Image 1: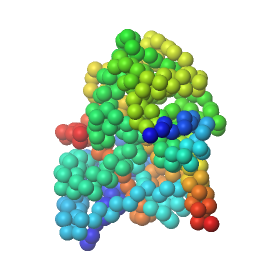
Image 2: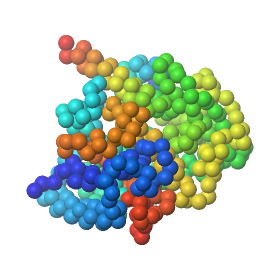
Image 3: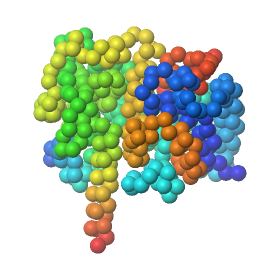
Length: 59
Length: 342
């Protein structure tokens, strides 16, 4: 099994959500040590990304 | 009457939960009743605690019998999205997971039995919510521990990572990173304690809040994306941290508060780590719900009192966090045998 593409948990957060899934992307981001408010904001972003993905599939 | 978990939880919200949430979120170390709120009505903590325990014992017995009858826990997950509306509007329209603490000896006693009696559903619920509540328990299994073994994981972090670093043992490193912003994300000021005594393929790191000493996370930094330990990945962890602005430091330069907490040999003092970690975890959860602690301040109690009963509560037995049991303290009442569930 090949190693997943290396991504930065913060700067590549959107890519991580798409490639690895929202939960994994958020877990990786938390390992960096971010503020509670920023974590909440990232969660919101992840929800939006996943929602857009679902809508794209449904269309 | 079928009593779901939501109904069960809602019944032990009132004074106990409100006070505990405030105490856990507030900036004060003193968790005596007088420190909770000045405007709250005068209560008899001992009477309140006893009443809460009687109620909980009744609820527990009822839940056991109901679950034996229908094997239903009423468990639902946390909503995946948090729309930009007020908390009250949101909880009125959705089932919301509210983190809270319950300092009840009957509950603490009941949890292990309850888990054993209802192992599949409730264990799954506890594991799911512990992982959501304390981020670092996600890494417990890499240390050979279950996610419910909170104190054992913390002991591993203390004895196996932080203390060797603070002693300056060979094979250890300490990095310091000031609070900063990266791509609009606020990074906390942290220490990264690195222990590679076991080799680069077994390099555990602990990320600790510079001010409070709270454990933000601890993980085996040698594990790559495929969960395979490599020296390359261990080195990448260090280089990434340096790229985020971290610099190497020495034990004597570490915040005295952090050193006091993590080097303490008094188990009562060590519970401060759990308490500080709990505060951080609660802030995360509250922020996810759209809360800003600085905005709600002392009004949190009144907000909680107005919450409708259509919401979910995650109860943590707070007794394990007690540093000094005191008869006047509703969080840590005296004359009780504190029990750690793991």
